[in-house]
Image 1 (spheres, chains in turn orange, cyan):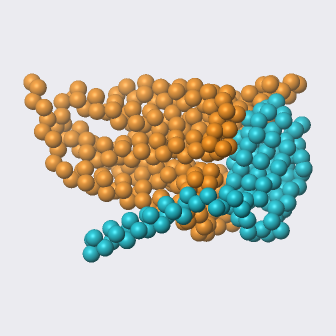
Image 2 (cartoon, helix red, strand yellow):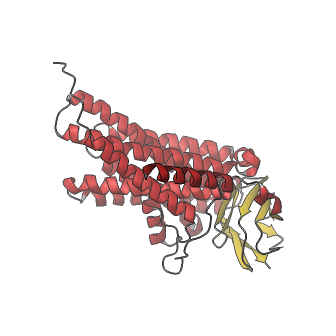
Image 3 (cartoon, chains in turn green, blue):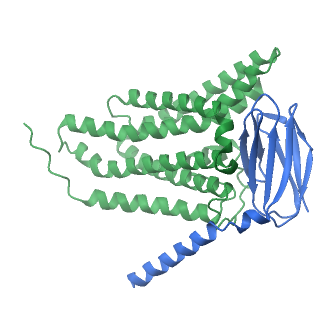
Length: 276
Length: 114
């Protein structure tokens, strides 16, 4: 039971952190629960589909289907996170300055929510498909241990929910004024870390092996498999053996996000539509 | 100045693109076969030469999925029930690289690189 708990918890941990951050980011946006719940639900359905067709997926692209699929959905998440940051740089000020009609702000808010719902969906999809495969394997194997393993799995899932809650509550303790800057930075590093992970998947698939020399090994200091290592891996993309290309891509995502936010944020706001 | 920089950047990007999609690497790779059945790896130890990329082919004969994982090889791969998984590993230094089934950590094995 403990083994099952650990396996499931390890998988849902990352998704829990990401959902917690998204909840904090969208704290003041109306109807956010609907969007986030939708993202989770879509992620769960997607995870079950991926698990059901895991064999087929694996065989695609000369056996590299899984790696390329992971790289692709990570890239989608990176784009969505970056887009959210840039969007907030442009519209956050306007919304705060009440330059726009409330109705428009709500509509825009949900447009940004759409991107974050995709991010939540991707997080659940990635981690969830392994949980689904593991639990299916447990359920399929006969013997009295199945119930105990299943209970362990459910407890692991509940712990993942707790991680989500702690992240959310923790972030909300930050004063509102500092919260925006904090979450912007968190989301930028989250995106950069995901991009570096996507690079690792492409390297494993032999699709993108340039600069694949490991730059350092800090496993002795902080193993990627420890709880802190895993937390930092999710939050800022910590890897104990990063390759040159991973570092390059990481830096590019951070710099591009900063440049886009500056560029978009410095433009004068569009005049609000005079509609009564 | 800006123009030169841009040209430099383009040249670098081109070089990177050429490097990354060279098929030569795949040809020199050593292939290693593993079978997973009854929640065990067969054989429990496989060998490969050093300084050459390795392709590990895992056939999962069991009725449930397994996850081939190795910390030292930096590899994680889910292999669905009754199917085959392929794992690419970069050229390795001589040594013993352990792997296991992440869904059942009692199943262990090692790749010995010489």
